[in-house]
Image (tube, rainbow, N blue to C red):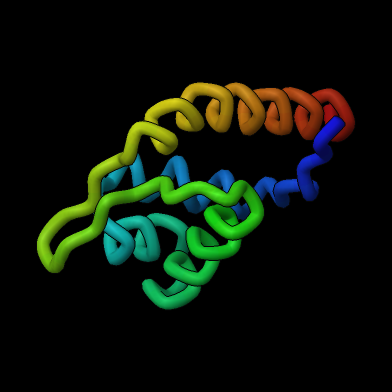
Length: 90
């Protein structure tokens, strides 16, 4: 059986935010960080998963087939983390 390296939620937040904003720069603004940080997070996520998640060019970012497959589970995981945080803090 193959095991996957754990994925830090911050990497999923970066992935979902880039997807929703359509750019690394806009995602960095939303997340209050630098574009290079978001880029590094996406590279770490792609390396962890062994998959390319975005097709990039100088003007736009689009999800690859693997990215499309991951986006809904990533959102569900982040929703679950949010529910856990609310439960623990509430």
